[in-house]
Length: 219
Image (cartoon, rainbow, N blue to C red):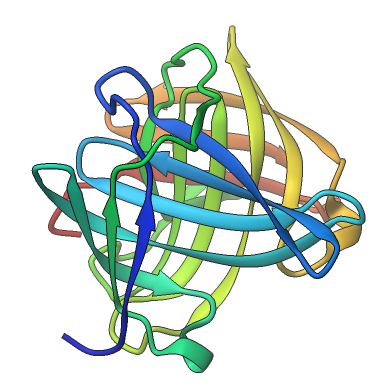
């Protein structure tokens, strides 16, 4: 296993919530740390609100032993600087449960294709180059990364609503362009089998019809 092991401390009943937040102060600015977690996967992202700035994100599958959570990272936006590929968390009492109501899109989704001219164009989700969207209890984050090279291509996230076929994203951080923070992006969605069809306009204003498929542990 390459790299360094960092240790963070927190204490929460993980069976009751999947989204957590805490703040730290760094060089006169307040940094928000947000964690999205399900039963097997964990993502931690750091960003500033005033002014908006994306700082870092990292995540991967984890195992639990007692109060210790060992994360095998699949991506780390700061990898070129810290070489971090493993991350250990042990319990403390500084984290706030910020989970919203659970919605029907909870889970890890991989970009698996697009629809153009009413025809599906599929991609192989087992390849190391992935775009994943992680949704938990009213919060979302997308991440583009390569599991073999540890390249990081971008990420963004915030909170969302999903009801009656309408899915709306509220962007709170965006690694590629801080001016996208604050945008509200409405979409139409439907669940067809194990696929999530996602239609609307991108943050650039381009029309899109994406297909996302539920991720399994071996993808």
